Length: 178
Image (cartoon, rainbow, N blue to C red; front, side, top):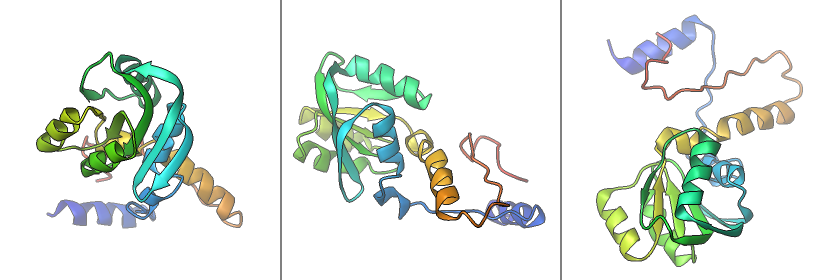
């Protein structure tokens, strides 16, 4: 048995369709990065490719930002950098966009939130004075799912008989259809 084959077979048996708009969706205003930024209260959000950058209405310490992250996305974040650092500008590169830290730094951000970042990227980011929040791949993208469903419902009003299922758990924790 192959896991992908088992999953596809289960979906077919249940007559389910899957939308896998992943990387292309990451470059839209509905992306995980933009969704997390909005959930944290970021204003003046702007986009450059996969990176979204904006400001908090007032300066927050890294500890305050961490509390907001943990509340907004219901997932513990790892923080790299001083907890008392004042943050006004923050960049977001969800999923596996750890390499976006350099673009975040160059955009003037004091902090960067991502879903996956490598050890050497963390070292370089912190050495440059950037505070890094690593929230995990799933948690950095899950906030976009309800927005995607809302978008599809408004864009496809003739598909009233469609039922949308919103995953609430990462697929590797036993939640797969088997």
